[in-house]
Length: 204
Image (cartoon, rainbow, N blue to C red):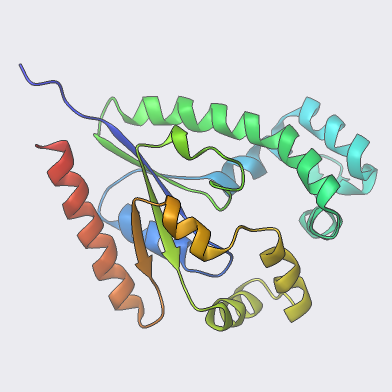
């Protein structure tokens, strides 16, 4: 009897590239998508040990009661690479553990699980995944999208961009690369193409 292949696929890309939109198209087709950012937020809200460790790094203003102050945390870590690394070292292991746990749960019902996460290569965790999908986009387009969707200034966008690996370096490390410089429909078509390719791998 042929052993069923199970694959975990990362969807990544620099800020404003459209990876969340791409991931939504995958979800719309019925595939489970885990969002690393949402998992991080849940851990920040629910894990007292994590909260205590983060307060040690950037101070009590990081939380309003049990709720993380996202603006304060972002302003603190994106302006200080040392603090960013410290916060990532606290959060990322917990996020990875949760992703593994949820992936195994979904694998009981499906053969393909997607994980949308920004810092796959920066965190050097690409080997956690069977395939890495990179969404790319022109930096000016990414800046426009981010300034609109996240209400960031140009300086804030560039600050966050500076903490991410260059797109060209990511391309060399990725299994699939899809550009997002035209229409939403074009990006959706690329998501459907990816699904077709992955299904052919699972069913080979």
